[in-house]
Image 1 (tube, rainbow, N blue to C red):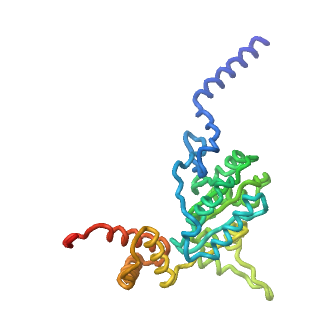
Image 2: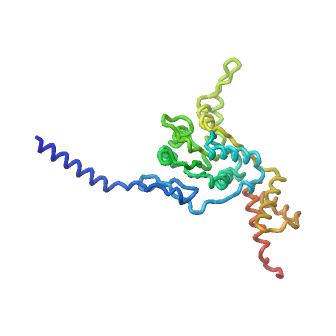
Image 3: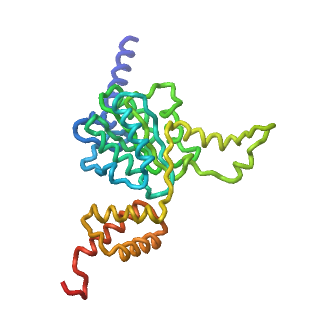
Length: 295
């Protein structure tokens, strides 16, 4: 009997050894000195942090027309890197108004003080507990960056993000904050029929459960920053700023601003991104001789 048991154990051990050779090797520990920004990637079913060799460097001073939002996120991040209490941040609103750029700018501002950024795509949010375990106890301060975020209620990443923000039995590391950008304040689509379920009890309003569920995720962010389309004067000021930064001349103001407004009209938006794109076109096109004109 003992020989049979020993033989069975040996067979099982041999089977386990063969199975282990088929499994992907564990990802190597990240080199925390290799970069200030990382992307979470998956390969062969395992997640790992990939250093960003050339992160997009942008200064806070370069972001125009969002002074209030800039002041709040800079203060919150300063508290965080100093080891003081700070909040997760949701940046929502009009496209091209500087939401993602603000996150990149605070990284540039505070990377010398130990701030690091980990960008996670929506499809990988289910791996958030693994990321938290990976950075737990590290001396650096980490921003977990989720860009252009929106959900349907049944998506797995939705529940994972809720748990990391406020609702898991496991403690979130003190060296981690979540900064997320979205075009929607509540991160989820809203439908007219959901509002029809709102009930009035006496003088109280009780929203439908579907509405409550959508609000509950965004409420887990301690700081909400809202971004709005720029008016004409703000848009033109941003365009002029970038023309000057790119080495262009600010002469011919009327002609330049007329061209900037035409540029915005064709794109259906007066945003910082559109102003920056116009400035690149304007400066680049005036830096070389035009066909048909004498040099």
